[in-house]
Amino acid sequence: MKVTIDADICQGQGRCFSIAPNLFGFDELGNGVVIGDGILTNETLDQARLAQSNCPEHAIFIEEDR
Image (cartoon, rainbow, N blue to C red; front, side, top):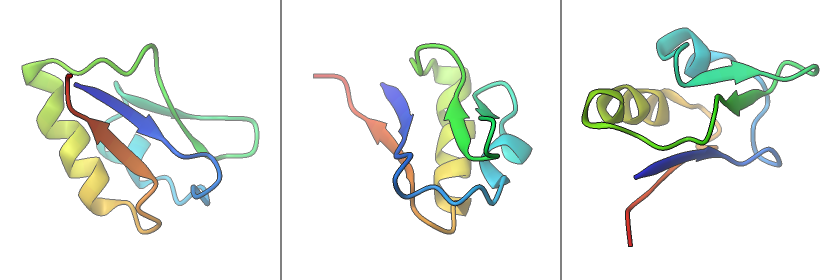
């Protein structure tokens, strides 16, 4: 599984990096970005889902493995 943030949707509310600072950071404009390659482990999947459910813009996406 992999987590991504749609930069066109994100408005920089900061909830993602407040909830999961090991998965998300922010760019020079304060918008959320994924740290590293976004690959999720069993341990980080729950954090990513929590951040996704708390994103007011619904800019966080979790892609299932194919």
